[in-house]
Picture (tube, rainbow, N blue to C red):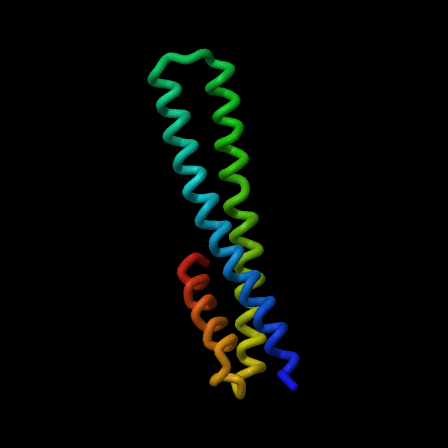
Length: 108
């Protein structure tokens, strides 16, 4: 029978993977929205459209710290799970967890 810790490891790895992607997506979205606002300002479009797009930009910017906080918590959680499962170091799921932990560490 498979070790039940492997299931936990898979779940926690998935959370870290998703939050890492989510944070990168919000950063990219914020940059694109910033460029869009700048283009609108230089094109001389009406002020209400610019304000609406600036609001969208602020919402994207607000999501980055929240995602960062959740990623840090998930990272620490996965790190502790990995420490408790050292004897599973030959398992593919354990190796995947180590890989995604390293990827997430770059974003923290």
